[in-house]
Image 1 (tube, rainbow, N blue to C red):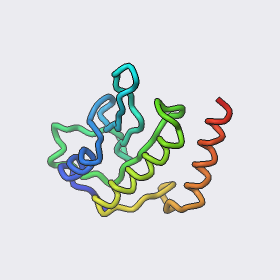
Image 2: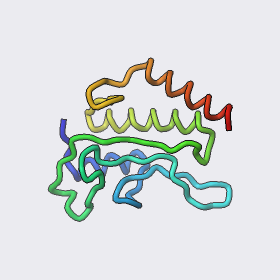
Image 3: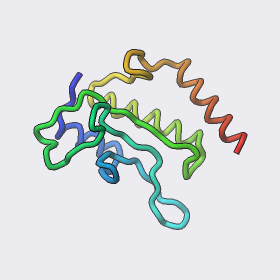
Image 4: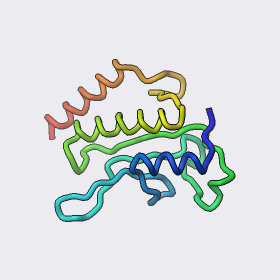
Amino acid sequence: SEFEGRYLVQTIERAGFRYGEMGIFHKTIENDSSSVETLFSAANMFEPGSFNLQKIESEICRGLVFFMELPTAVDDGIALETLVTTTERVAKLLDGVIYKTPSELLDTDFLDALRLKTNFIIDND
């Protein structure tokens, strides 16, 4: 489905994202030294990947991509679960569907594999 630009921005901001660097949205946290760090981000799935807030009223977005760089500023397992629940919330609010690839729906096996990889990265730091 397609997401109307203005409604997309309202929804993603409601989920705690802020528009910022690279013209995309970031979910941030404040660290122990009171500086803000990005936990994960959401970008336009299609070129150019960014959002132009000056033109967002007339734009249509056909998909979002959510991504996170490990290690994060918090426990990576908690960051992953926050990413998953936030993505689910945004999808529900937008009446969207979550995919693991452009042609495959997200499933529990894939989520379990991500959780295992996250634990592996944590254990091997």
